[in-house]
Length: 531
Image (cartoon, rainbow, N blue to C red; front, side, top):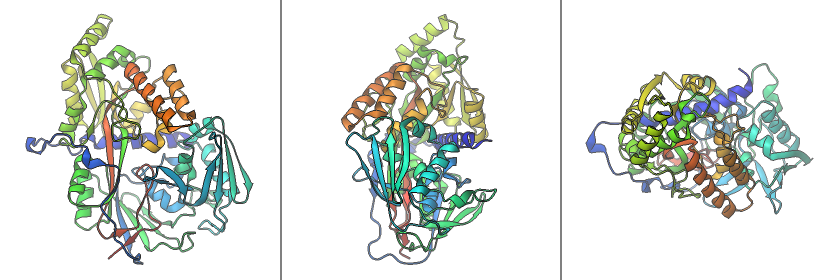
């Protein structure tokens, strides 16, 4: 498999795995159901971390959401659920996102400055920073690493190449980036995978070796068991207080929380609304993030799919009630809604498609008059998607659509059917879109030229609106454009949205110094254990 295909399918695997938790904790106990309550999912830090001077020593045990198996930033669109925290520990990030101010500040780099119209960005590096192999992390190294990322088809390479005209090392500590057009959110790229700078020596051998300038270095990896990183004594910010990090995976959200409660883990990465509510109500501190378009269905728009018919897409959107999905899968906890961006988002609330069974029935009847045979195929993952599938079957049955459900063993098979074979009409999916990356995520998921457009959605007007969003120069312009994107979404129905999705990195009361970053990544250079 080529690197380009590997990176695309890895990012799609994350999308499948994220939504795969949708029904993992579904319960049949009616007493457990509650009215959906989103107030518990307020974005930001929850609780307090220990005060005082960091205690030196110890190993931080992290129970992750998904196992990181490839340590090259090219291989994934890094976020806190796909291995972004682990990669940031090895490579660091050029810029850090401050959730409280919404601004980007220097992390591995010293600072960044944009010109007045956001067409040129000047990145200033810190003097004396070295990779863990002893070589200099200077402007030439930054340019070389990003060029490597682009050449090898990193997950965000297509967007970068479309928006960035050039980059150059102006002097040993300065990199200048020139945009094709104004790009207000370019800094996000340097805070995610492209900004994870890889040393030249990483490619010196036949097999990739993870060599970065982060606070930790690669120690050992046993597939299916654990990843261990050890402290980098030469880290530019000073040697970490911790001796090492250990990442392990528990297959269920409840199991992940249970090991944290039992004291067998210090940090737990959670993406199940019901389990997150349990963690917060149990007074476990952490970092809360909410991603818009976090739960839903990808629609096959390609020729040959019955859902190439926009009337049928509108009918399905008018029939599938997110509140029902939330009640049956998350015991009533969550942020259900058909809108792209909820009130909890910087860009919300927008007004999504309305639930209207009368209109849905009329649209299905019209489609049947035009030859629709009344059946739609739903694709899910075995053991975790059946409850969702049953809900979809029941709700679409009310408007005259018979759903034929197929369940595959796991995400690899899901990707093959959705991305390679296009053998589906509806499939469980997540288009998780954090506020700090709204343009990159919408471009990747829904622009007709994007290689990550899993549904094959192509709409000239939507393309233009997304492109305008990317070149907007003020937050007000972005907000106005997002409103227009929602209007076009309601008309063309690119996908089905069941709601936004909370993500919670929870930790015990013994953990201090964890720094929230973008996309549910946390930075661990200052982390320590009180015990």
